[in-house]
Image (tube, rainbow, N blue to C red; front, side, top):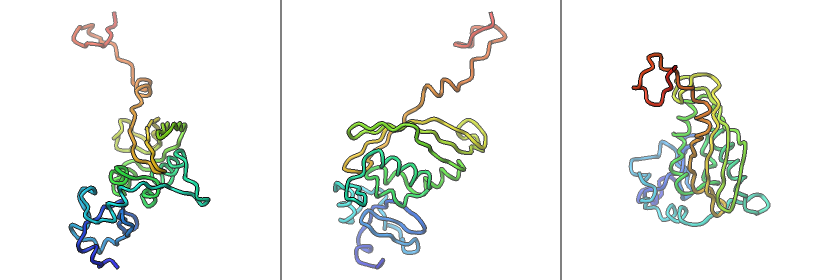
Length: 206
């Protein structure tokens, strides 16, 4: 029951929201109409629910139907296809823990899909060594507002990310700026028609 003493006395760690339900680290799915101020801690680390704290701190492992732990490459594919491309954090708690659960909320994910219609990521390369996974992928989307610097219905960008995994869960992600991609796509400097010295770095037409 939503009105149990645990909900009245404790604040909980919110993992994500989907279909009008708020999923907590302790395993509850609370409907929007039952959410009141103070039910979820602003900082998940300060949640007072003991089960939420235990769930966040305990090592866990994702297992498949055969009982074997899922490998790190499969975790990344599930994150990109089942969460990011699907615009749903409903399964995020099954493949990720720690800061990813709190930084990747359903609201943020939905906002990205609203701003960049048709957002979709395709994995090109996956390299895994120990607990670290390097991913090279292409993202296509419509950037009708020019937020990424190019306006159009079918923008494509090459991107990189480094993931850390532990105990069968993705624990951290770091974005990598594709400097080579930026350099190759950057326009050449125009010649300075005045042949002046004030435009440092810009070649003059001498």
